[in-house]
Each structure stands twice: as C-alpha cells, then as structure tokens.
Length: 133
Image (cartoon, rainbow, N blue to C red; front, side, top):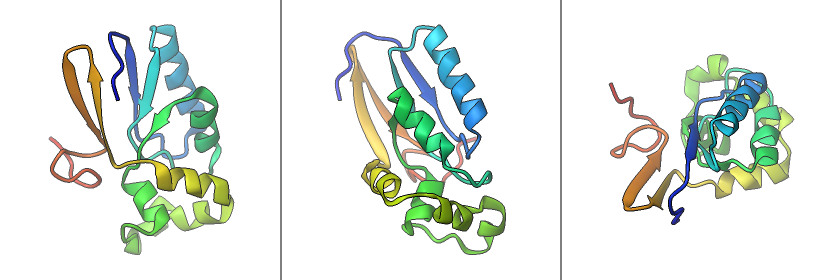
C-alpha cells in the first residue's frame, strides 16, 4: 500500500472500549491524520462489538491482533477467556462482522514517501503475541 506524503494515525488495543476509541480517533483527526490504522485487539476484556462499528464508520484500516485471532479460533484462548471474555463477544457479533475480521491481515507493509513501514500488532518476529520491551 503506497500512501505518499501524508499524516498517518495509529491506534491499537481498544479492547471493547468504544468511548476511548472514539476519543482516540477524534484526537488523531484533530491533529491532521489523513489515514488511520488500528493494529489489533479491537475486542476483548469489555464484551461488546461497538468498537467494530466505530472503526468501520470512521474508515479506519484494521488488522488482527491476538484477540481477533482467538475470536476466529486461529489462536487458542484457553483459561484466559475468563478475563478476555471473547466467548461473550462471540454471542454478540454478527456474521458480517466476523467475515470482516477474517479479512483483516496480521501484517501490512505500507510505503509512506521514501519510508517502508511494517505494521503488526506485536513484533515483526511474532506478529500476534510477542511483547516488545
């Protein structure tokens, strides 16, 4: 994806907090972001799907984090579901939203001017789960 010279905005880890996500989007817009990306974990912890609607309505370009992968069954949830609450999200989400999440990549390469950026949720080595300290 080539974006030319423009101001980008990056969001991540909304975890079901639609109010905070709306505020983040508005702050990025107020600061001139022309294209916005959400780098994963739009859902989880707070069992709601409004964050998905907020991202879609704002035209934010999304990709999967480990929570989306768990929601889709691509990553094992195990005992963490008591905290992450993705089984509750599964009862709230419709098939259209699930299809949309399935289409989100786990990695995206973008070209901005002369710079190449690799966008991942976690790290380049483990795109979904590795913490970078």
